Length: 347
Ligand SMILES: C[S@@+](CC[C@H](N)C(=O)[O-])C[C@H]1O[C@@H](n2cnc3c(N)ncnc32)[C@H](O)[C@@H]1O
Image (cartoon, rainbow, N blue to C red; front, side):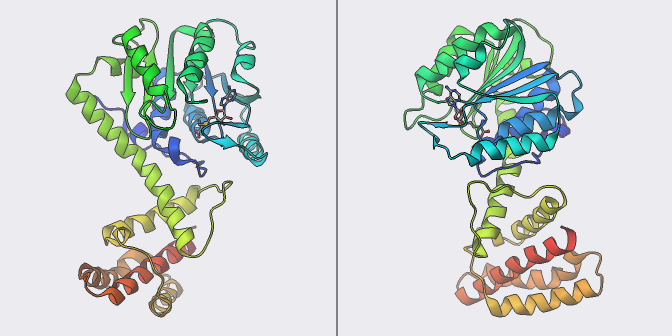
């Protein structure tokens, strides 16, 4: 069986914007960086930075990396729509906060930016600009001469066949043109991996030789690895909105200890099946639960989950009986309270 290391499968991006489309691919971004150890990486299309900052995060342990470049007009395109200036500001505030001299951006059209790079100097290129056939083809052909002989090119959205998306079509042509050098991950709208040249070093290059069973297992595992990220984002969004909050475009999801606390709450919800049911707040139950929780926190209970488990078990039993709508709401109230508690306890 051909699988990446645990470090890759468990990779979790510190930075997550509201653009969830790329988040499920971030373990693959980490794999590409850690495995290929590229000196120069260029990204065409960075938007709010979900893919870019996952490359940068993975590069923390890769001393070979010298130059990681985000290229974008930060004006949007026909699929993203036109941007307001806050998109550019958000990306650059995040970039500045990293204070990593290896990471930089070029705010320009891809064709103009290409002139700043010498031939054969890019080891890893990520193409994620406009997604119509003509654009993706032009991006590839413009930047191909800049690629190192054994470089690797990633293409996002190889699986999308609607709304004028044409990456899939160009990808099919590449599979003909580069036999044995292409591998397509099919989740999160698809990520095509094209290995130029004949180098056999690195795990990523072996993808193209996998037999169908190993390829299927790998795709499934990387889909699940990606879901760890996307489910975390959707869970947190759910917590905010079900408590009356709003998530603006500029929202950044929890990091560090706060994220760990929310993950714990997500685990509890899933364990008790609360993630399967529609969410309503029930003030009465919420207050009752709050009282119990306050007491536990006051008593400095070390293992909050263990302390709450009998009550949660009881609620799980209740929710199993879906005939009682009122009881179902009560159970959900408990879940909503739990997340507040976990946040207060660990965040
Ligand atoms: C789909 S978004 C990129 C998503 C990003 N990789 C992520 O992780 O969310 C595409 C981006 O490409 C930019 N773009 C499209 N065509 C471009 C071009 N010809 N030159 C420069 N930027 C372009 C758009 O402004 C947009 O921000």
